[in-house]
Length: 117
Image (cartoon, rainbow, N blue to C red):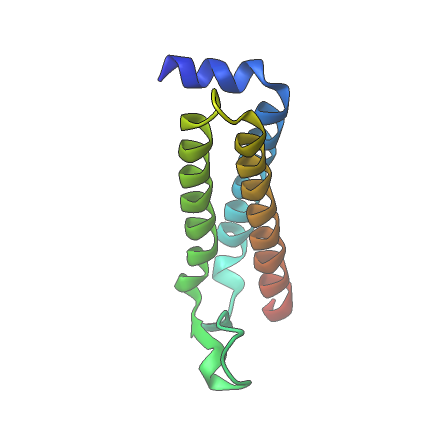
């Protein structure tokens, strides 16, 4: 475990992308928690559904976005660190992919909160 943490600190790109991902996750959670009481009982979350009532879910389910993002980041970090010695480029791609997913999830959360607030 210490070796993996050292790997992150040594490789500046891994460290910065991990830091940015964690910051965006924290920002996403903060915005949701702060605005949770002002959100209506139903919020649009299921955008793949036809327009109308089918897109709406309870406001508590908005926490799915940061939860899925955090799980995705954790899985990508575990995969990236396990293969860093053999394929450092692929490891960096995993970290950048995590940052991209968290960024999209944060943008979606902010847009949903601003849409219904």
